[in-house]
Image 1 (cartoon, rainbow, N blue to C red):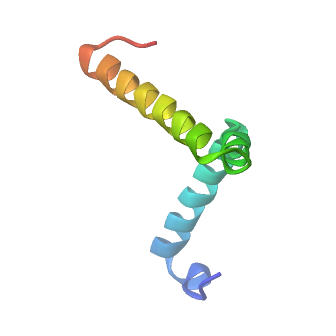
Image 2 (spheres, one colour):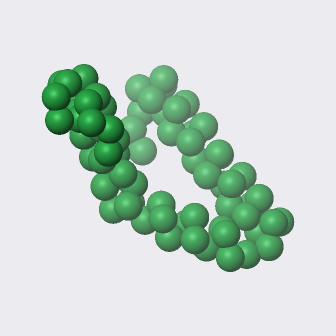
Image 3 (cartoon, rainbow, N blue to C red):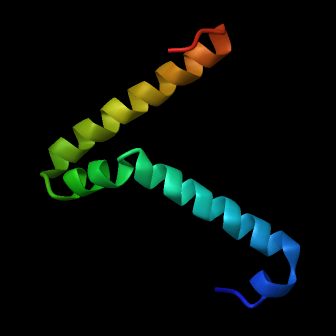
Length: 69
């Protein structure tokens, strides 16, 4: 933990935001996906990455089209 966390508001806000993001990521099961990918063959983890990339692109497209999935 940087010392500035206790005295300067800017780093503490950034760290708090990162901690909230970490909590959200853990709650979404992302850690389980990462563990799964790490424990399987490279081709399997590549497939998982491909699926995630397609989902991210689809969500971005839906946001720009004004649709929500």
